[in-house]
Image: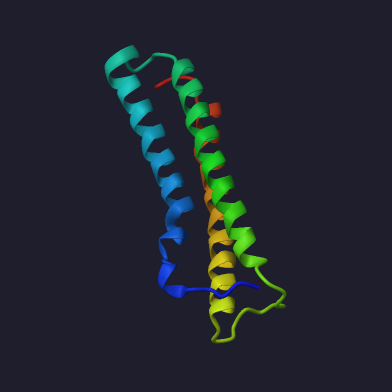
Length: 125
């Protein structure tokens, strides 16, 4: 097992998936707001917005999935068993992988919930 150099590690990996969800949320609602306010009016259809939000969702879920895959590899590093609570570089590495994996799952669910809203709402009204 190669030695881990913690100086190359950072906590930013924890926020990748939540940041993707937040960007998806913001982009989806800003797109719908601009579409309804400037393009079709209050009684207009959300057909185009539904397609765009679908694309945003696909891109966000792919990014979240890649983050989760990386996190799973971190969590499965080495041959240690649960829980990863020892004060060693390997356990800290695995714990960050586990925390990132959990945040990725939560972000995927939140992204899907944002997208589901557009499926049930057909008009700007």
